[in-house]
Length: 130
Image 1 (cartoon, rainbow, N blue to C red):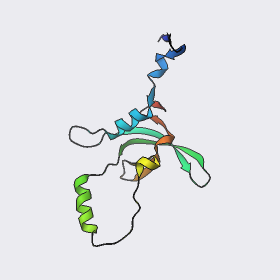
Image 2 (image 1 turned 60 degrees about the vertical axis):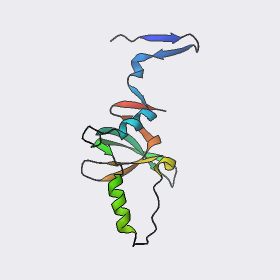
Image 3 (image 1 turned 90 degrees about the horizontal axis):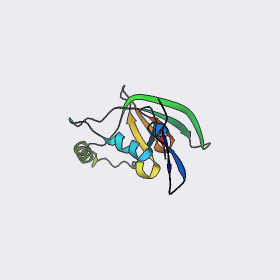
Image 4 (image 1 turned 180 degrees about the horizontal axis):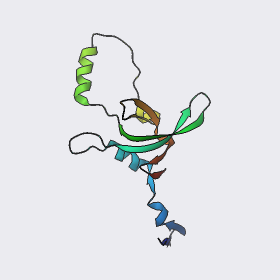
């Protein structure tokens, strides 16, 4: 395959369309993760993400998760769960995923993992850029 390159005249930057096809922006990744099928079930995807050690503030191993989906809150289940828990007064931390830049993903075996979106390196075979 022949690589095609074009120069943008106003910014004098070389834009390589061959490599751009293999890259995806983080914003687009987050939108694709939220997508649902026609029947309402979440879309499955493959993702590679680095672990993060908060104590040492260092990156860790590169983890690859195949055929996973984003764990989303079902509003009807949330309302019924709140009604059941009204009589129980347990303090629970609110997982502010937006502020903490995290998302929960569900693996094939039902296991739930929390990932940091800034440490996503690859999504469905495409390199993630910011």
